[in-house]
Image (cartoon, rainbow, N blue to C red):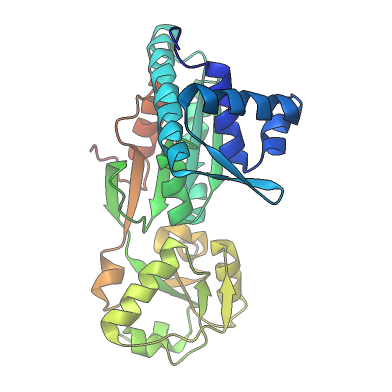
Length: 305
């Protein structure tokens, strides 16, 4: 161990845990599974602890494995710090940015933030994928994404919130729906009288609705469940019932085809979008430039954290 732990063995171990199997790690690394197994065995011998237990065709990390995984992530963070310094020198001529976002924010991000960045810095590769709130936070914490742009994100001590903006959760209806014609804001019990579509459990939207139900002692019985904001909008457009989302997630509201009704519920009124990165993670010049673009977008009103 005089020369330190083998970077290759650590990589093979990290990929095996990440993919959930030795075969998955081998496919990702382009080597034979026997090579992965051997390198992990040598790492276990070197450390003097068991790291993986076989279960069926997969593997189960031991408690000791979690400590080694933290070490692997620290090594990655150190390498990213080096790349961050190099990126500064290169003036954003190259780099890599992974963004994870709530579905309802994608159109806004691609209209003035991400698109403008890509035009100005064509050498930087940008990845944008959609995820639920919990999955998005997990991706940022585990370094699977540099930036998270999430509605109703759960708190996590490993996250640094760069900026927030209140985006009240609204009832989405068609213009001549009875709730849209009344002159007062609806309460949750008013909404419960009509068919309603809800996001699937685990999404930030659904978690906010569940909190609101508890606060008003009201239960919504959904007639339709989806895991896509687009699908919820289509449900309302077909005049099948109501849905919930933030007004800026629905272009049809701006065009007057649908309406967004503010409610009397304080939880809905306080709903926020969050721009986040992992705490203590070195940020490249490219990532910081993208953060500035997103902060200047309508999602965050151009405010600085």
